[in-house]
Structure formats: C-alpha cells, structure tokens
Length: 429
Ligand code: AMP
Image (cartoon, rainbow, N blue to C red; front, side, top):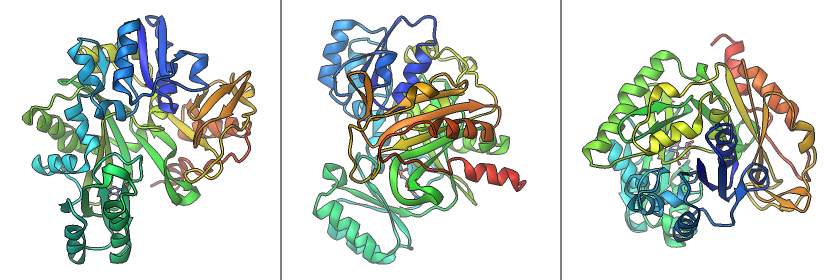
C-alpha cells in the first residue's frame, strides 16, 4: 500500500510510526511532515489545509489510502473532494466535520438528540445581544467562539467584567478572526475530563483506549491553555460502569443522532467529556484524533493500523481487529521556552540519538525540522516523548528518564503528567 498522511505534528508522527510497522505498507508520504517524520516517510511541502494542492498531489501519486491528521482539511472539504473521485480517505465529510468546525452546530446537535452536555444559555450573532444575556447567567460561565480559533476560542469567564472583555475582543475587535463572529454561552461544568475517541466507518464503530490530556502549560494546571502538554492512557481511566454509561448515553445516541440527521460520519470522532457528579457530559466533539492523545493511544495499539484504517475508509470496519496492549502509556510534550506565547525556533536539539534505542520509548516529533545533519526546533510543541509499559507509573518513569536526556535552549515540560492518577491509586481511591 501507498499511504498519504496529512499534517506535521506529533499525532501524524505517531500515525506514520504505526503505519510503517504494517507489512502491507510500502510507501508513505506526509504533507508537510516534520524533522522526525522525514526519517520514516517522504515529506512533501504542502500545507495540510490546502485542499486543491493535496488533490493535485494525490492525482499525481495515487495513494491507496489518505489519512487526515488535523481538522482544517476536513472542515475545508478535503474528504468531499476525495470521495467525489472515489479515493479512499479516513475523515468525515465537510458537513459532518461541522461537529468540530462550529460549536453552535455541535451544541444544537447535542440538545436536539438529548445527549448530556453543559446547559446552553444562548447563541449570539451580535455583541449587543451577547452583553444583554450576561446579567442572567451563573458565574463562572463559558464563552465559546463558534468557529475554529486555533485553540483560543474557549474562555472560562469568572465574572461579568471578564465576559464583557472577551466578547468585546472576539466580536468587536475580531481578535480571533472569522471564527469569533458568533458565540455560544454555556454553563461551567466541574469534574475530571476524559477523552473518548471512536473510529467509525459510518455504520460500525470501535472505541479506542481512553486518555486524559493536560492542557495548561505549568504543573498543577497553572498558566495558559496550550495545544496539550502531555497525555496518558490507562484502562483504569474507564471502569466498566462508566464505559457502559458513555456507550449508552453518549456514543450510541450520537451515532443514532447523526443517522437521524442524515449525516454520514466516517473517521475518528473525538468526544471530550467532563465526568460530572451527575454523569459524563459532552464538552466538545473533534472530527479527528487528539494531539497528544493520539501518541498515547497509538503507543498501545497492537494491530495493523493500515488494515484497520483501510477497513474504516471502505465501510467494512471490524471492531474486533482493534487490539490493545494491556497496561498504560504516556506522552510528555517538550516545548519551546515561552510557548504558548512568543518563542524562538531554530534551536539545536541534543540527545536524540541517546534515546533512540530505549525499549518502550518512542520520540515523536512535532515542531522540528532538519537543518543539514541537525534537528532543530520549529514550533511551540517540539517533541512528544512517548512510552508504554505494564503500569502507568512505569510508562511515566520511562518517558521522564528519556526526556531528561534531551536538551535544547529554553526547553520546558511539565513534571506532573499522569501524577493525579498515580496519586489517586496510591491513596486507594
Ligand atoms: P472545547 O474546545 O469546547 O473542549 O473547550 C476546551 C476546554 O475548555 C475543554 O477541554 C475544557 O477544559 C474547557 N471547557 C469547555 N467547555 C466547558 C464547560 N462547559 N465547563 C467547563 N470547562 C469547559
């Protein structure tokens, strides 16, 4: 098989890593890829959001399967363009990708189908209407820009003044661009978050192993939100009772709701959940794998990814083929100093060869590029040190030991990835 992978982060490196393990894979292109992917696949300098350029490239090389990492190509209609040509692709059509592309579309979908979610106070097309609604909400409240805003579109407003300021920046000053033209105001939920991702062919589905990610930049969940500072997966995240509730109250009503709305959904569907005292509630849908959740998930994959994804793209997914390594996995994200604010790129990364052969550890590249013989930083999130082991503590220990051998100027990473789960376990909770 010849496979085209779209994207250039740690998630895409994880996909490439597992795809090349398949005996049926002969060639992988990755657009645009990164400094680590370049060692395992042919990187092509095409922007993953550029539908026309990707179609033109696929026309030339005829991949047997295309796998979309990020949301932008899906929201821009890449799958529609591929399906019109009968080319196999993993990822939903543009209409279905609205579950991620429009927070209002997704909230209305959840409400229409009675799927548990945060109470909606209202949706607003003008700042005047939004300001008028503020006196009647409970604080803190959550404000969400409707469209894609590169992770900056959700604001937990502590009070009226902060909410007014956010609405002004988003709706009047257009600080987030067109994604902020409409907003959604909703109740704040409390609890632990859980990422529950399924793979579906539009008919059958298979759940992936559960993960939890860490969004804030500093230990103890301090500092601003990031694209993700780390993630871990362990079966203990999802006791059987909770798995059953998620299946019956969330996953299956979502799939039934999509069918009732005549929306065919094929690909990965990421369900972001808040485990509240009154049960799991949907925070968000994403139309793709999460990053860094994908790294932790794929580290536990014990099946032929190329085969399973071909099945999903061609409507014959067999959920029993997805087998998982027992135990746990973890991914620590090493970032450039200053991220998610301003940071410098082009810093030489040292220590990569010394971790290349540690059993159970895989260095997944995100913001890196090759500069001659060297690998240098090229983004905020630089590397994802990923490890799998029999227990969460062991996978964390492996990942932290490997991270301590890597160095680049300004490097930062959280020291408490997975710590909450291991504390709970130690306390017998
Ligand atoms: P979203 O992109 O909608 O998932 O929002 C990003 C993050 O904001 C989530 O992972 C949560 O941490 C937080 N969040 C979103 N909606 C809510 C809510 N209703 N209550 C509390 N936190 C929320």
